[in-house]
Length: 174
Image 1: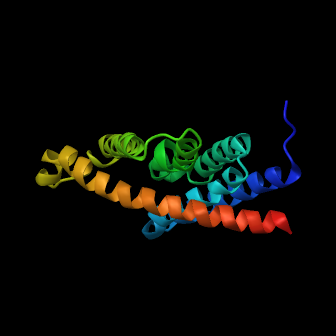
Image 2: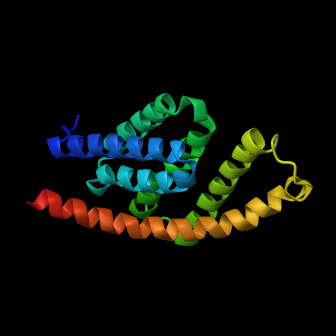
Image 3: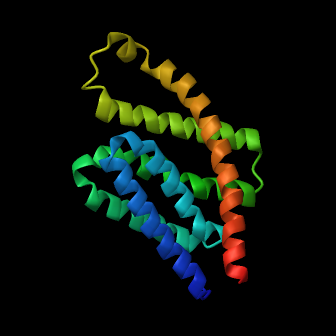
């Protein structure tokens, strides 16, 4: 079994601590919920910058567990992170590692995102929405709006990945 270097363990611990903190702040200040998802994803990219998939997996699982513990009253706000946002950095990394076609990967990830949003809609918002138009046309709204949003989000996350990789490279060089 490959021994994990100490800086990869430290990166994973830092990623977990940052992601959990950012998720907790995002959930409790609901105006920053999506910002919490985004920044927690960026934090989880730290171990991936050193190709530490085990470190990422441990940081992701620990972040999910701690976020559920710290935000148990708002579990459904954590659910999108568990189902999609927290796993998205790993999927992007595997897409590049396995050299999967960009268009195919984008289609699959957009379908995954739209599916996550539909599940969240069904179990969280459908019962509380009183706007008939939204109830009637939620699937096309998610498929069109969600896909457009996802494409922009995916692009931003690839740019963040480059920045995180540069930052980690600078830190570990010194």
